[in-house]
Amino acid sequence: MSLDSTISNTTTSSHVSLPPNSTMDTPLPLQVMSFPNLTHARQTELIAWGTVTLSLSFLGAVNNLLVLLVTWPDAGSKFGLNLLIFHFVAVNLFMCLMGIPISVILILLKRDGYFIPPNICNFFQAVYGLGATLVNWSDSMLAVNRCLALFIPHHYRSLTNKAATLAVLIFMWAIGLAGMLPMSFGVGGQLLLSDLGQCGTFPAVGRLGMFLMSLVSYFPFSVTGTGALLILLKMSGMARHRVVSHVGASANNGGAGAVRGRKVILRHLKMAKILLLTFLWSAFCNMPWGVTVVVFPWLYRQNPVEILWLRTCFTCQYGFTPCILLLGNAEWRGKLMRIMKREIVSVRVVEPSNSQVADRAGDSQAVARARSISKTLPVPSTGKDRNSTDNPL
Image (cartoon, rainbow, N blue to C red; front, side, top):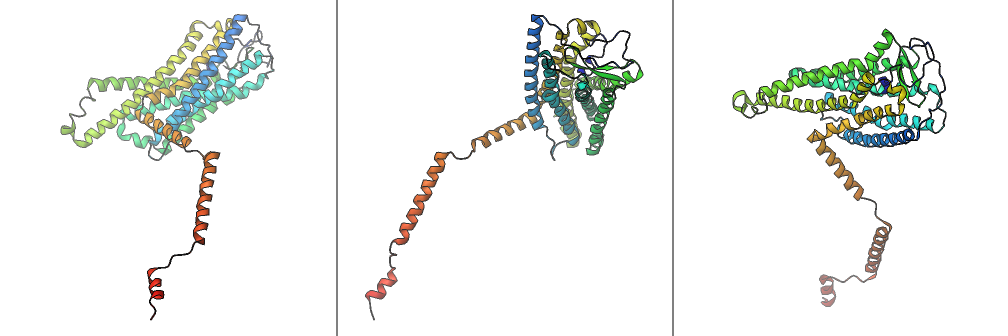
């Protein structure tokens, strides 16, 4: 449920200067703005922000890589859910490995006096916004997947087969491209570079701009929120009927089939709880942005360095959401431990050192020498030969 700078700079009160009497309905001229004069305290804060954000981004990339290893779809996995989770983690990895670091580096380069072409945001922000949009829609599709598993478990397999899952992935990418590509060409909004060096998305005032922003943020947020609410209702209903405590007792009443069905529902419910935690974590990471836009919009212009910490919150979302998936799933933790043990064993089985090679070469030479000596010795005669020579006829 991520809300990144794809829409974090959608207000004209941001620190991107607008020409007089201009609105987002008309194209903004590309102006090369110099880096603002910052006080010593702000410069120190900027360095601290870059260091903290890059460190969290690197740590988040490692977290995502670990989860990516254990969620790699295989023949024995549940194709629908595993592929959606794998895609979700892969997009978070991209944001931690590329999106966040590049955005930080652009700001630091402009601070150091390097020229950043204003139209660079037409490419970078489009890719960055596409990644954030895919995170949003991946959240929402995971919520839909869990709702299908909890409310219509008998049709879950048919609704989440390979063809349906691939269709969902294509749908998410199509929505992301449809939401960001038009603005990279100045249609429905613009992707602009601020005087601080941060790229931002500025939708046009009107129906088209609102529609594009709805595609990348409002629609998936609504789906995710609705799904989370339905999951909560299902959890409360199952707790009220005490399904967990009656699984063992129902073995004599409902038969093996009924018990198996209840266990499947409980397994779906467990994964739904884990995903619900990821939704809540994403909402928590987006909360500072929402409060700032609604209550303190003037901070975008008066304290642009402080606004950068919102991106650090998004970095925590992209980097640590997969940790919730890993910590909440014992099967994935066990798989990760097996992978780590296998890698440790493979590292120990290394090529022999030079001394070991020399020792082995010396041993082989000694064996060869012994064989050559044994060939020169006379072969002892057998008993039959001795009898034939000592007892002539």
